[in-house]
Image (tube, rainbow, N blue to C red; front, top):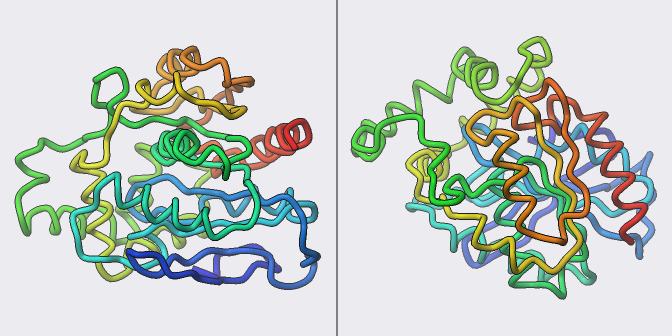
Length: 294
């Protein structure tokens, strides 16, 4: 996936108890490699073909002043793909271990389901997380209402059939473009060939179906509304006005649960991934947030 990273970014990795976690960071010009800069960790959302690429149009905006850390989550991108039925605890464990390896508290930038997970991480590791910047955060079972499953449970839980569904729905160019058009983007003309290629490259990794199917089945869903009242770090939320499954009304309702949600921005005419569909807008909002939360 290094082919889809901005100039000056390279790939590194660390070992966690679940395997190798690959991440992207500044490794060469035009970026300074001076130590001591504030660290910002970017977590991509889940869904067929997701990877750190999702944030790659945003983090160059702060690469001159901040240390960027953008991992491929376990089971996605070029990180390890253990052949297992993934659980929420797997992601909490691998990311907790990763954050503990970083020397200083970080700003955590995360999207959709990982935005919700970031809230839980902040509650568990308040000493490691300085602030949160989240786009459309949702546990996909918020207020006890499932939001994300698109196929009947008996079908997606049938062995072999679930793998066929993944192969047909995520591992060819037509399927990837259709997924992006129908579910993630508000405007299809914003989907570039590069975006399709990056998603396809991630979706075609060996054993990529395990993590994707765990999310599709609902194995990873939880109620973010239960975590937000305990949130103790400053948080900004950005919401795509045309986000599917997690509508703007849900975002407003969730944000109202915590006094730590200090900013709530709406990006018009945008779906669930404003960082990929309108990256310049999200980058501007992030720059402003970091300026006021150091």
